[in-house]
Each structure stands twice: as C-alpha cells, then as structure tokens.
Length: 312
Ligand code: PMP
Image 1: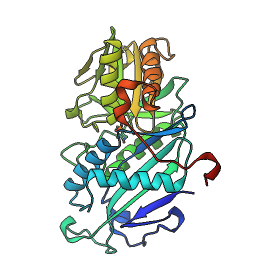
Image 2: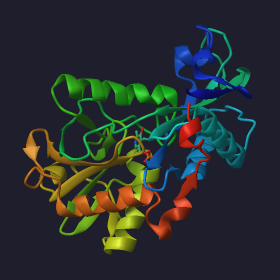
Image 3: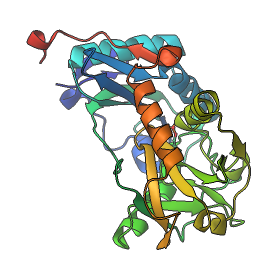
C-alpha cells in the first residue's frame, strides 16, 4: 500500500486529499518531480536514481514559483526513503513530489499571497514507453513553451498542458510520442523526454537554450556515453530535418528511461530499428540505474525495504 507525506504527516495515499478550491487545481500553480526507484531482483535492492539532484531541481522550481518548502534536499530525501519503506515496494516505482499553492481561494492571485502545500508519494511504475521496439514519433503542431512565457526549465504544473496537448495530438494520430519544436522551428524535446540523435558516431542533443528541461537522465546519458563508450555529445540547436537524416535517435527521461525512436513523421530513422549505439547506451544505462556498475553507485540511493516475508 502506498503512503503519502502531506504537509508534514505520513498517511495512507488514499487518505491524502485536498479541497476542490485548491489554487493549484485551478491555475497549475505547482512544481513537481518524477523520481524512479529501480528494483534489482538479484540483489533484492531498490536503487533510487539521483535522488538529491531531483530534489535540488525541485527546490529551484519552488523558488521560481515562490512556493516555500520547509525542508532541504537532504530532508526531502530522508522523507522519501521513509515513505518507500512504509509503502513496502519490491518492484520498480515512481516517486512524485508536488509542491503547490494549497490555499482554497479561487482568483488569479499573487503567488506571494498564497499558502503552500507539499505532498510526496511513491507508486509502482513499469515501462512508460516501449523500450525494446523503436517507437513512432511525430513533430507536434504545438510548439514548446517559450522561456518568455513559462520557464520551461522548471517542472511547473501549468507548463505541462503544453506537453499533454502534444501527447494527445500525437497518440490520436496513431503515434507513440510527440516531439515539440521551439517557436523558431528548432527541435526542443519530447512531451516528457529529452531527445538525442546519433550522427557519424557522435551524439547531438538540443542545448538548454532551446527551451528544454535539463533532464537528469540526459545528463547521465551524456556522462555514460563519454566515459564508457568514448562517445562525445554536442549540445546545439537542431533542425527537424536533421532528425530525418540521423543514423539513430532516442529519447531519455525518468519515466521513459532510454527509448529508441524508429521513425519521425513516418520517415524511418536509419533502418527504423534500435541503432547499435542506442542499444549499447540503453544496456549500460539499465545496468547503471539498477546498481550494477560500481563507478556509478553514487547515483543510486539504496532504499530501506522490508524483507519479502513482511512486505505489505
Ligand atoms: N523534458 C520534459 C518536458 C520532462 O517532463 C522530462 C521528465 N522529467 C524530461 C525532459 C526528462 O527529464 P529527467 O531525465 O530529469 O526525468
């Protein structure tokens, strides 16, 4: 059973409720994170991936949205470990911290006038996109939110209407995922993932000035590619047609892991299958997140879990 931490209290997730007048529900005045716990069945350990980095990004976002969180990144990490232990999961999980304007007032009010709330809870989560077969993407008719509108580098609740409109359009048209372009027509990112292409043995990914979320998985993949495969990543603006002409393409994200892309706008990328560099990176990445690679163990926090016989 999942537990939640709501405004300082641990309680069953089913009992963690807010009122219908909550400001964030009406106006998207919230900041959230997505953190994965990856189960290693041989070791019977749950590795939480880059926990502290997620909470650092979370607190940055809260600062921008003027949401006061009465905890440090270390304290939030401790609370999360306690929640995972209480919930008793022995499988892949997803942890959702959400800080929001919890005041029950319906009006477009100043952020500084509204009271804050915090909830954190874990839920079981397997694969989000297909990890074995290369997925089909399309470029969205929705452009990625600009930094001049809502800061795209913070995970702000209201910002995600942009991603969700794109995902909805893509899936209704029969694609698996949407790729959003910037207003100037450069490639930005997937609805909930960063994007990479492989070109002549190098990785290329949009730079942080192309309205992307600077993904923690993106950073991990850049480091793994360099250190383990000797493959460099160039961060620069990318054109849509470069994707059509790429040798390989993949998406990265906490939920999506490292997902191969086989076609974009019905144009095959390479031969349409998962490419060799993508496959090598994906295998390495899965070993890293499940605590099988000694040099990356510092990225994993081993969660205290209950023994199998005592699990809920
Ligand atoms: N872009 C967007 C819009 C996202 O929502 C996510 C998921 N957090 C990502 C990229 C990937 O970021 P990360 O690797 O930190 O999960």
